[in-house]
Amino acid sequence: MREYELTFVIQPEISDEGSQAILSKLDGILESSGAIRLLCDDLGKRKLAYEIRKFFKGHYYMLCFLDTGKVVPELERALRIEESVLRYLTILANEKVVDVEARKTECKEREADLKRRAAEARADAERRDDSDDDDDDDDDDRSRDEDADDRDSGSSRDDEEDDES
Image 1 (spheres, rainbow, N blue to C red):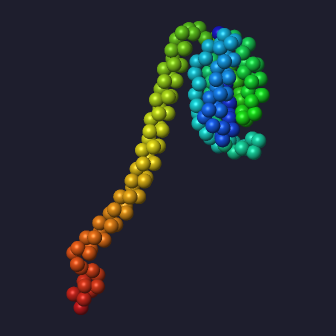
Image 2 (tube, rainbow, N blue to C red; image 1 turned 30 degrees about the horizontal axis):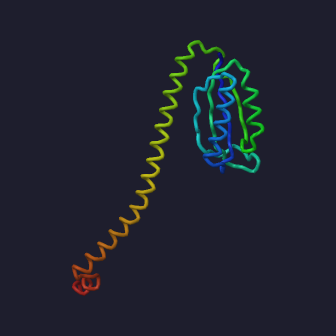
Image 3 (cartoon, rainbow, N blue to C red; image 1 turned 90 degrees about the horizontal axis):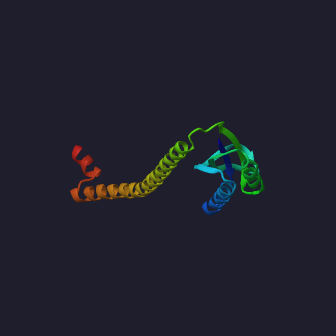
């Protein structure tokens, strides 16, 4: 068995459902040909090095799988037909995988780790958004409290200037 990495770029405005449809289509091709899917990594949206079909950004995915090599033309044909795919590239990552089961468990652990990190990143982003909203309110509250303290103390700058004279 050989290990392959298929990296492809999808148009940035394609919804998550559309991306999942493409991934499930590729998984179906892998399954029907007897290939072993190891890992699917969502690399996120990134700026392209150059404009492709009037797009400056793209959503990157990496699909790792084990096969003898017969499924690669089928996958590339499916990606070529799919209009929302901007580019794809398949490389031979490992000429001969000796321990297939060890490689499968290693990739499952990596995929679980990637999903955990993605969930943490989403949670951090949500917290930052919430804290940004809260920070604005806190600043307003502090300025209101300071104004109230000035009014309560009954002193103002004009009074202080009169005292100095």
